[in-house]
Length: 329
Image 1: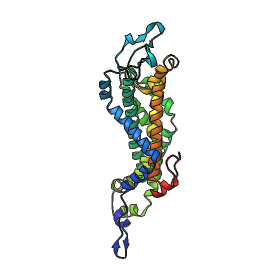
Image 2: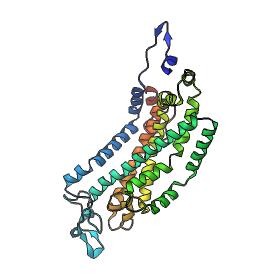
Image 3: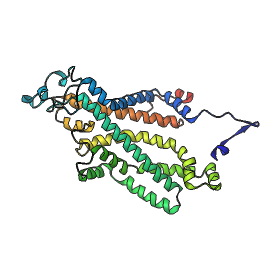
């Protein structure tokens, strides 16, 4: 239906079809050097997380193996050797008191942090799109009820509710899964509001009205006409949610209610390292640096995606998005 309405004729001959949307998107994204660098960094982090067992096998270490012979118990558990026990067997040194390998725990911590962030984002997107489309396409009563529920969800304090829920759930429940569910089930309201606003705009367009007049069901209109058009705003906001979710997971683990030992997590490592910043600074600096690099790369990549999808909007960060590159894209 939409294809028929959007088709144009020039002098009786069909006009040449524009470049596919995906092709234009990738061309605009490649024109932003900062976004390309951020994408490479994110890809490397994902590869490190996926290949954590292989990397630790190459190093010959286990993330949960204790090495009491490598710590100085007389000094309170400080690693023996220079730079926190860095050696050919322990590439980044070892943890104070436990002697566990830092490199192994960092790469396994990347698995937890990235998996929680991406999984929570997928849950937020699924719930937000569902409730947003239902509110936008429903009648006045449905829109009012769903919108009020969304307002309540948006008003909920994420960290306070997360702390409360994480404290009452039995300790036997897998913590990474629990953190994912808590973040995803509490923080979908903003996505639903964005999708609802876009749906209200889209359903007033000619091709949607034509589909409705032709007898299409509401579900078919949503699936065939609205959901493809919602891809750009949903993808843009999802790219912003991922670094935010990483920060929330790290904060919950730092507060002691997130991922529990012995499962490694960057936030959990920061919690254990707060008293060792003088005796073993690498124990604090390494997970903090990984969090900083990951959040920065995802934020820059999210901004690049937003600019590539909507080239008329200026980049918030103004990194790698000069006017010449935007014009050429």
